[in-house]
Amino acid sequence: LANHAADIRVGKNARLVHVKIQDEGTDGRHLSMTRVKVGEKSLYDGFTLTIGGSLSRSETEARVEGMGAEVRLNGAYSITGKQHTDHTSRINHLAQGTKSRQVYAGAIDGNGRGVFQGHIVVDQAAQQTDGYQMNRALLLSDTAEIDSKPTLEIYADDVKCSHGATAGDIDEDHLFYLRARGIPAAAARSLVVRGFLADPVENISDDDARAAVLDVLDAHLGLERL
Picture 1: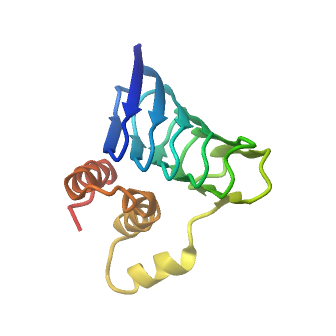
Picture 2: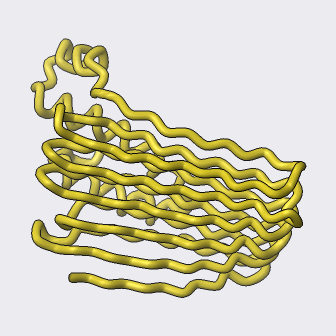
């Protein structure tokens, strides 16, 4: 059992890139809680890659307290067997002109189950808030499951907020395109999954952190670095 907690404060005009790679063993249970306070004109850029553990939950609560502050909570997950992974977040916009972005993408195989619960709360004082959240899931088997619950709770009247969730099978046209160029079926499937999961990874603002996540993802999918 891994039980983590973090309390983060990002001061005025500061920028923090915070990347977590969760690759616990097949019997591992991973529970984490991250609380973040973001000050004026600052950025918290958080990302979580989940590929391990039999049961995992990564929860983040962010308070966007300063004018012009921004929070990014992005992530990717690739699970199979009977793995269960949960990504839960709550972003509280408390000041004017703040921004948040949440983009999660997951590939679920076998009897795996993914859960996404994203909650954006816009306080009455947080006019001109710009909030966005999206969870996209790729179901690679008939028994894979995704439960998505994106939520907006808005008390201001001058905002731009949206949310969404999609789930679907792997694109057979993409597989056909790769197979037609001599790529074996298993490798073609992994390449399609890699392209799907790489989308939120590309949102990591630090080049070295982004490259490290892609290295781990490629190794997990059995691919060399592209």
